[in-house]
Length: 105
Image 1 (cartoon, rainbow, N blue to C red):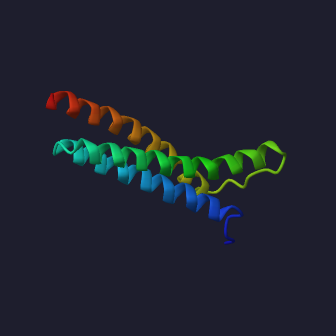
Image 2: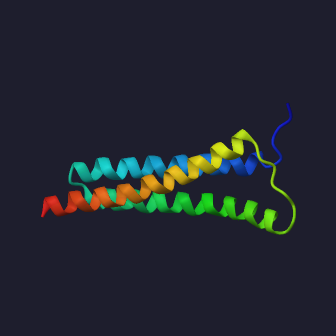
């Protein structure tokens, strides 16, 4: 079995998506203990990681749009799934942090 053509991009999706999700989890944990400054820092870190993942994804979209088909593999599907799950998790974490902040007031 050969290595997918865009393995480096796929790994960036997985890596940065995982970083974003991990930072969002840390933001929730910080908010739970009342450390809202840390929670907001971690949310910013999550957003930065997602920006990096989006850069990788944009490269694939540009490649496809220019007529150079992107090879579909299970790893590609996993990378895209990882990214989309991380985006949803980050959005939910933002709401949870805001709820903890309201409860603190």
